[in-house]
Image (cartoon, rainbow, N blue to C red):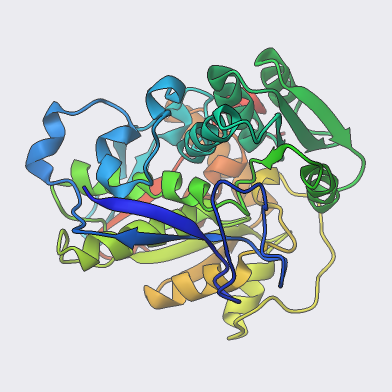
Amino acid sequence: MLIFMTSYVCPRCQVHSPTDALTWRCPKCRGPWDLEFAAGPVSLPSLTSLPSRRNSLWRYEEALPPMPYAPEVTLGEGRTPLVPLVEGEEGSVSAKLDFLMPTLSFKDRGAVMLAAHALRLARNGSLRRVVADSSGNAGTAIAAYGARAGLDCLVYVPEGTSPKKLEQIRAHGAQVVEVPGDREATARAARAAADEPGTFYASHVYNPYFLHGTKTYVYELWEELGGRLPDTIVVPVGNGTLLLGAALALDELHRHGLTDNRPALVAVQAEAVSPLAAAFHAGAEELGEAAPVRPTLAEGIAIPAPPRAHQILRAVRATGGTFLTVTEDQIRSAQHELARRGLFVESTGVACWAAVRATAPRPGLTVVPLCGAGAKTGLAQ
């Protein structure tokens, strides 16, 4: 593969910044970065080449940004099982068990990319610490992969975050800062710290390396299904990192002629915090006026103002998808029901299954992710 990353680029302003810089957002509109590539002849992996490759997301390295230190950082993430849940004439549903990652959540897909990039910056002498903010899972993943890379990490979390998630973050050697208030207050505190000299903001929202890690979710589906894709891919959406990664992969696979079907992306939010669903069904391209945030069992997607809202709404519409919302009772019921099937998943991670259970079957194959392990939060009461 001859593909070389050239810079960060703001999708709104077209402002550029070197990827070696610690500038974590567009200085003009203060929005998140995308990656811009300068490419020679570009190829993606063929199905026939994959069986002999390493058993991690790095088997798709042609599709990933160049990462010279990836071998030092990987924990064998990726390649999670695809398990049938419903098989019927009207449609079938399978679950991808992304809670079987090294840190027990799908966030490992993006965290390994951020850690490998941060290690490169550290060895160039421009970085002295890593800062992240999270409701728990992303912080855990950054802490684990930061430890693997030998980086000092500071993780900001909302006050009241699951004690088991806090224990996991601290076990990896990261310093935890609990912030009074909601998830947005936590993000503001982390961003203030990210502006300090020598700090790399390992943001799963603002830094596009994370999205290029989460896109391997779809590459794995493509490989598992023998070069095809499901008819529908359902994803939980707070900041939209899994959905936007999926959209990247769908575009790449289609552009290179590696699949002949384009799945609909169906996004799921908790009814209690559903700004994107409201904007989508109102036909808007941006978020409307902020609604009050209510408590929800799906803490990992309780994001009232996602910075990539415009991109998320556009990606769902481009595939003919839609937004669904789920109630607290539906989340609770879905978690218990999956546990009785042998799958112990945290409450955020069952939101997609809750939504699929509550709606009419979609034709063909639908895939839902089970994103985080139940051991992180316990059963919802």
